[in-house]
Amino acid sequence: MITIPDFLRYNRQMMLPEIGEIGQEKLKNAKVLVIGAGGLGCPILQYLATAGVGTIGIVDFDKIELHNLHRQILYTENQIDQSKAITAKSILEVLNPTLHCIAFDEKLTSENAELLLNNFDIIVDGSDNFATRYLVNDTCVKLGKSLVYGSILNYEGQMAIFNHKGSKNLRDLFPEPPNPKDVPNCSLNGVMGTLPGIIGTMMAHETLKLIMDLPTLENELVLLNTLTWNFTKLKF
Image (cartoon, rainbow, N blue to C red; front, top):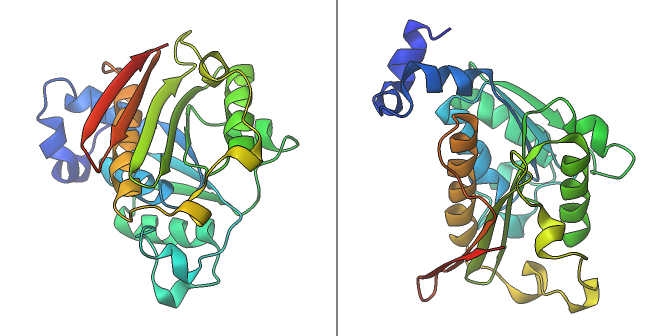
């Protein structure tokens, strides 16, 4: 049920005819698990929390480091060496005191993946390695969970929706993960600080649309080059 404080907080988005009170109530009742509280995870978590998603889980075993701060904008120097998941939880609860936030300060593994994902409606993957991405994808397929996928490198980002209402999944696009030795990463190749903010916000946007049953990507991969502003959408 939407309360008066809910209306006062969210009325600007509730004014949209596609959202209204029904859409806001869907957000309030939704349970979303975000894998990773790093570059992508920070904007995803902020926008899900402030838009009114009722329950948000955070999975991340990393601690905050100085080199994170140019792109992981939830954190400050005072929080270096603290748990990302626990720190993010405390910040989100200040941003939106009505939020029910659950921090899982642990690594996602084949042993705990089903247990962690099972109690959430939608999974958002902001992880930074292929092993985790494929583990998340395969667990979502097994459990029948919709998955919001994103990745970034240098100036480029990707986004897709997998396994939603019978749609295809990551293995339909890329059947097997690449050899880790052949995969560039941000640690070695760098990333523009604003890029995860752009792609993470897009992922949060699609997550909100999924929750409210608005039109979303279906068997499409979005490719965005922010250096040239070249936007491509590929069907698969």
